[in-house]
Length: 434
Length: 143
Image 1 (spheres, chains in turn yellow, purple):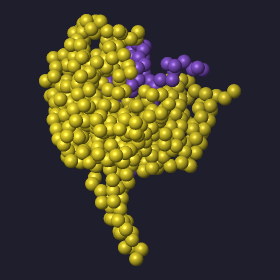
Image 2: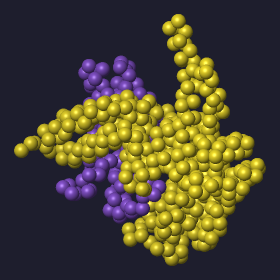
Image 3: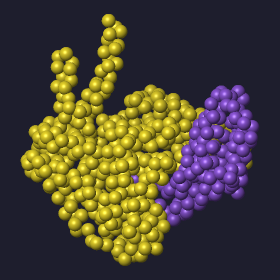
C-alpha cells in the first residue's frame, strides 16, 4: 500500500507528465506558452505543499488533492483545446474584449484566457476561478463554448453575460459595480429587501424549483441581471437575439435560486435596449430600417406580453444602471459596443443577403490590403439584421449559413488586423535582410 | 463515484491556511532566490477581497445552466467565506488595531510587494508584525 503523501506525490508526477504532453500542441496560439507556464507554476506550488505537510495534516492534504485534481482537469482542457472545437476567430476577438475589461480593472498581472468546448448545449460559460486567490500565479479564466454550436457566432454573443461575471470577480471593480450598477438597478424594487423579495416570489405564484432558496436568489439575481446589462453594452444588439434565442426553450416562469425567471430578463433587456436607443439609430436606409424594426419589434412583442408581476425593476433604475455601467467601462479600451455608421451596416447586410461574408478586403499585387476595419460586434449585428431582412431568400440563406458567413468575416477581419499590426515589424525585418 | 462529492470541493479556510503558512516560510527562504512571489501575490488579492467586501460573493452558474445549488452547498460556501472573513478580522484587530481596513491593506500590500523582491530591506518591526498577522490569520482559520 502507498502512504497518502507518496500516492499524492505520485499523482503530482502524473499530472506533470500530462502537462508535458500538452507541449506537443499549440493551443490558443498567442497564449500557449503563458498557459503552460501557469499550469507548471501551480503544479510546483502544490508539489511544495505535499512535501511540507505531514501525514496527519489530513484537511490540508485533502485540499491539495482537490487543487491537483482541478489542475488535472485544466490540463485536459488545455490539451483538448488544440482541436479547436470552437470558433477560434470569435474566441480571439472575445479575448481582446475580456482582456481590456479584466486588465484595465486591476493593477496585478493580467489574467489568462483559455478557450475550450464542452458537449452540453448549456456550456456557454466563463469559469472565473472564484475561489482565487489560491495556489496560482495568474488568474485563468476558462471560456467554454458548446461544441455543437461551433460556427454559430450570432449565438456566441451570449458570452458577453459571462464576461460580466469575470469582471465581477475582480475585487476592486466588483465593489464599484455593486455600488454603482447593481444597487442602483434593484433600488425601489422587491429585490432591494429580502423580506419584500420573499413576498414577491410567492405572490407571482411561479413554479419554484425544488431546491429554491430565497436567500440565494436574493444574492444571485441582481448579479445575473447586471450581467445581462453587461452583455448588452459590450456585445451590442446581438446580445438580445442570442439571449432570447437561447432562453426561449426554457420555461420562462420558473423561479430558480441561480437565475431570475426568463420573463423578467426578457422584459429588462427590452427596457434597456430602449434606453440605449438602438432601434432609433437604425432608421435608414430602408434595408436596415426594415430589418431593425423586425428584429427589435419581435423582441418587444414578447416583452410586452410579460405579466406585470414579472416586471421586477423600475424602468428609471434600469436607465440609471445602464448609464453608470457605460461610464465604468468607457475608459477600458474598446469594451463598449459602438454603433457602426448606417451605410456600413447596409453594405454588410447586402453582402450577406448575396451569400457573401459581410467584410471584404482587396489585396493588390504589391500586397497592399484595403480593408475598412469592422469590429466583430458590428459583424454580428449585420448577421442578425440579414436574418430578419424581408429580402433574405429563406431557402438559400438559412441560419447556419448566415452564421458561417459571419464567422468567415470575423476571421478575415482578425487576419487583416494582424497583418496591419505587424506591418511595421515586417518592413523592418525586410530592411534588415536587404 | 468513489469519493463523496463534498470532499471534492475546495475549502477556502484550509486553502488560505496553506497559503498563509507557505508565505510565512518564505520570510526565511534561503537562498532568497528560492522565494516564491506567488504566495504574496495571492495574499494581496485576498486582502483586496477583504477590503472591498467581496469574500462572501457566492459562486454562480453558467448563463444557461439550470442546475440548482443545493442548500448544503450554499451553506457550506457561506460558512467558509465567513470563517475566512472572521480570521482576517481577528488578525487585523490583533496586529493592526489602530489602522483602518484600507490603511492595513495598503500597508501590507506594500510590505508583501517588497518581500517579493530579491533583496528586501524592511524594518524588523514591520517584518515581525507581518509575520504575526499571518500567524494569527492561520490560527484563526483553524479554530
